[in-house]
Image 1 (cartoon, rainbow, N blue to C red):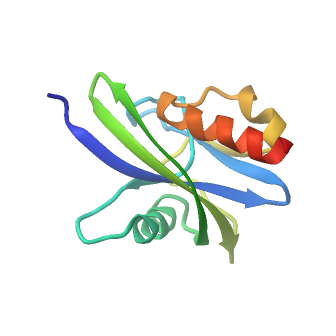
Image 2: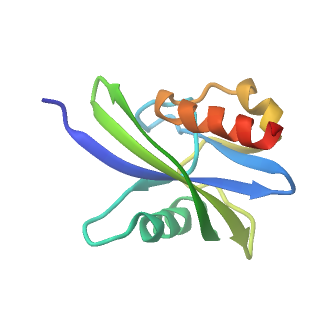
Length: 132
């Protein structure tokens, strides 16, 4: 049985745009785009993990808001269970530490980047939500 990896991702929204982060060269799934976040550590709630991961990965603070989705995707290295939450930045803008680049995309432009498969269901829900 493959290893289950439980992660969280932030759908950061600012001025009607969504933050997408491209995975760096030295990361699994290099070049794919994702919602920033990471693994939930023992004793953390998903929201706490997300706040910690945003501080570590993008050196920024965010308020975690509404739950969006939980999906599972089986990769060759394991099964990733991704829970996404809407979030808003407060304080300084995100800075690159691990990712190759970040982009603020309008909801209708989310398909202009290649999302990691685990993130695709959340992308589809975001497009539905913002087109309504």
